[in-house]
Image (cartoon, rainbow, N blue to C red):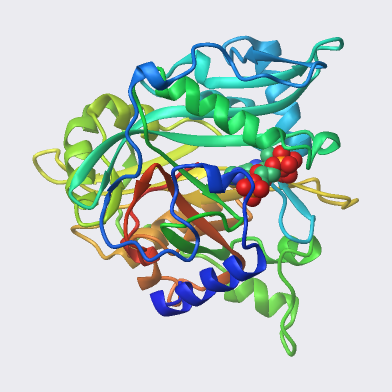
Length: 401
Ligand SMILES: CC(C)(COP(=O)(O)OP(=O)(O)OC[C@H]1O[C@@H](n2cnc3c(N)ncnc32)[C@H](O)[C@@H]1OP(=O)(O)O)[C@@H](O)C(=O)NCCC(=O)NCCS
């Protein structure tokens, strides 16, 4: 991403355009244009301060917990998100998180079912709103903070702009607070008070013909389709010939390697071995993770990505864009560029159309050489009830699904 000066300008502009936020101005977050100098919680509360009963909802609706172990409830959630979740600015693509992905994303070790909050229409039981939290330890500068990661905030298209989102956010906050947790991390495409970092996606085309046909990319002037296909061809052999899928026996050394690597970032999670296995275990159509080990069977290098397709809205020929999203990568015996080159090869074999990667970590080291193109639109990182000075995207070591 741009340097911090440009980001400060961007935030000032956002704050001029939307000087007040009826909801966010009441929450423990810094104002958009605030200059924050120190890290720490913004407000301190105790369990006595937390209301014990759920927030009020308009009369037609009711709170429910979504049990993602129930096929029908998981299907309800899938349908809500499939039809109403995040779209790109031009409304051409909408994220299509699969049911198996949702189960994985919502059930890490020590998850709570009561943090999978739905809103249904009382009469028809139709699911029209959702928000979730999962527990995570995230280090901000030198402090590991017990927090939650908030995700899958969604309100049905027909119920938009009726201030339902703040009710969902307040209710998840209440339920998280009841477990004595007071901080959260989340990302959003919109600028709210107040980003910790402003990041951007880069895209590596793997199936240029399809990407052009669906309007994801365009054919540059003087470029033919066959030249384009040739340009984006990936290697046929792994640069790191011994890379293989992660296995359970690798977990201890892989967790240690990853935690060590993450220690150099200013905002980054810490993983227990149990959490590591949950997040990185290879799962068909959800998670791909490869490792390289040394002669003592210690993991020295890791690449990983998750499978998050998008529905292609209103295209007769193609219904789904198959996208890989870079997760956590560590290179110690190879370069990060060669490691990701191997990831591209595996992703191509798995028939992905595009490989997406944020400009966090050291990722901008390989974008140009590996033919990534910059995307449009930013992704903001946020912390709830924790202020910390603005970070450059390359100081972020956290991936939220
Ligand atoms: C995001 C979404 C739930 C917001 O609902 P909405 O009906 O548009 O907005 P509401 O009238 O209920 O609430 C508006 C408030 O929510 C805030 N808000 C909007 N999007 C938000 C987001 N992604 N995260 C946190 N707050 C958000 C607004 O800033 C506003 O608060 P403010 O007045 O303090 O600025 C809805 O647009 C949606 O489902 N979008 C598609 C999925 C999506 O983008 N989810 C968020 C992924 S990060």
